Image (tube, rainbow, N blue to C red; front, side):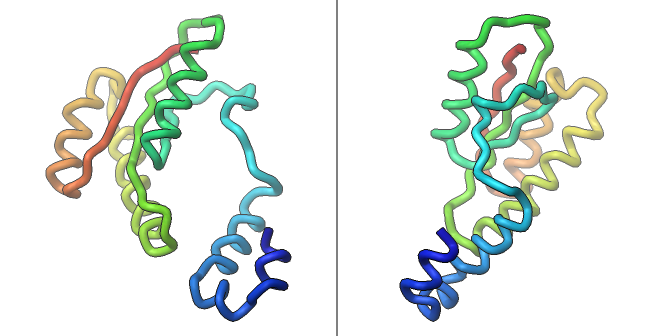
Length: 131
């Protein structure tokens, strides 16, 4: 995609920030990844769109539960722009820092996110599912 957009209109896609974002992404990971294909079990899953949050829940609910290990899923809604993605990264960092300080993340998540909602003026969705 990077090469295609660069060949199509380098100046336009550079000014819009898209080439920089794609270049950064290709240095971070070697290819797009799908949560549904991941074999790892996570303690916390962060999504950035309500639609993706719902897809993660749907996938987890459709799996055969093997070990009943809880996973906390939190949606931090981030508009799909370069500037919002940068600001969203800081917000996600705050959310993860707060969760990591909890002795009982599943039990404390409602109060934790309510406090962050007031502080950040941001709505969060969350759910607990099981592997």
